[in-house]
Image (cartoon, rainbow, N blue to C red; front, side, top):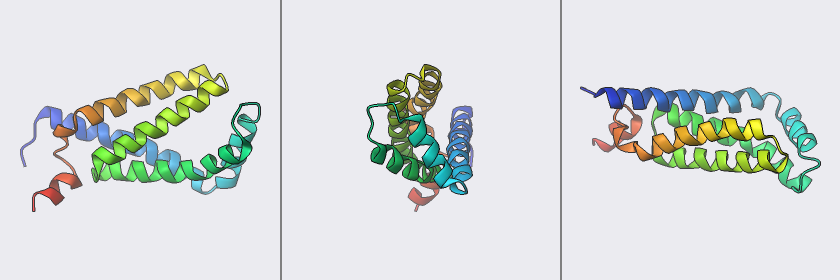
Length: 135
């Protein structure tokens, strides 16, 4: 299978984002209650209701893990990237609500990477998506 430098670069960026997201989710599985409690404490002075923060704290690690795994495999890459971008938008919103501007700034970098992946999905040759659709 001959690939272009752009396709190789895309695959490596996609996998790097996948490892990042998968890692975030994976490390939180063993301390799910602690992570959820940290989120509730961190957002206690925000306008967000506790049940919403608690629910998000329970769901986020599973979203991160799933998006990460799909990106690593290059499976449902477009949908996984859209989901990842939505997760980042939610995280940016939360960061702004508690005035954690440095968090929001870092999350904007993630948003740019997702923008790049989404808008260059045509370069997603080294992936499960390509293997499955070749049939």
